[in-house]
Amino acid sequence: MKTALSISEVSEKLSITPDTLRYYEKIGMAKSHRRESGIRYYDENDISRLEFIKCMRDAGISIEALNEYLTLLEDGEKSWEQRKAILVEQRDELLKKKEAIDKSLARLNYKIDNYETLFKGKK
Image 1 (spheres, rainbow, N blue to C red):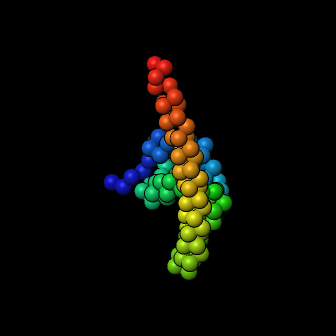
Image 2 (cartoon, one colour):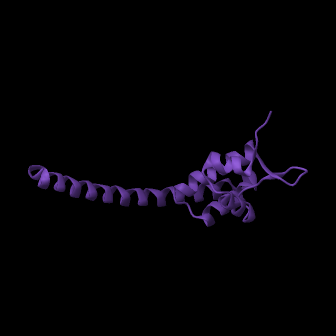
Image 3 (spheres, helix red, strand yellow):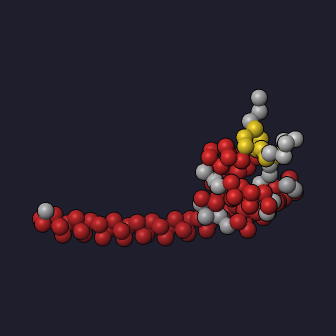
């Protein structure tokens, strides 16, 4: 049987609030289906898309860039260059952020090492 998870199950599985899932649907980034009863559910493709969205959002990719990419994805092969350009641009931005984080971590480690050296004899 194919996967068909409720909004609460997807929310728990992906650590995304139901409100966030509804928002992603409202702005067209995510999709769900409805049972005859009106209850929302997500199939394997929907969940895979949401996993991608979560990964990109966790990395700091903007909603705008991600939504543009996902919209272009619907165009199929004719938009592959544009999609690749978005991914390259976002990767470059993430590399800049990573460099800044690495510098901050090095500074923090330096300060921590200084404290450990300074207070080693005072314990």
